[in-house]
Length: 144
Image (tube, rainbow, N blue to C red):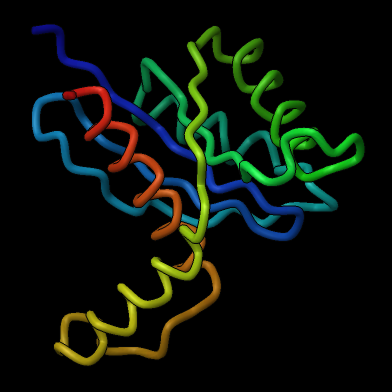
């Protein structure tokens, strides 16, 4: 089996969570949260991530209920993913991201209660954990 690296984005207008995974371990990990300027990232930050990790595929969470809305978040996610696809010549996949931010928040609260997380949960942690959930779900489905 060929070793591949996957990157996932939980897109937001203010912050976008990023997670990374490898085909060997099949375990997604939170990477960071990118500051967005009205839905646009600092492309140098993303260039640096792509240089360091050299991902083969990018996975984007897509809100299912907004897919048909004309001026929706889904439209902005499609726009952002197209830029990633062209800029890094990488294949793109989408997965329904229903409730990932809520699940991420609950997971981080649980880690805090168990003493795994020692500090207060920051907004960026929720975004990168949501991207991790998106990526893990995608990998789990690919196995089926």
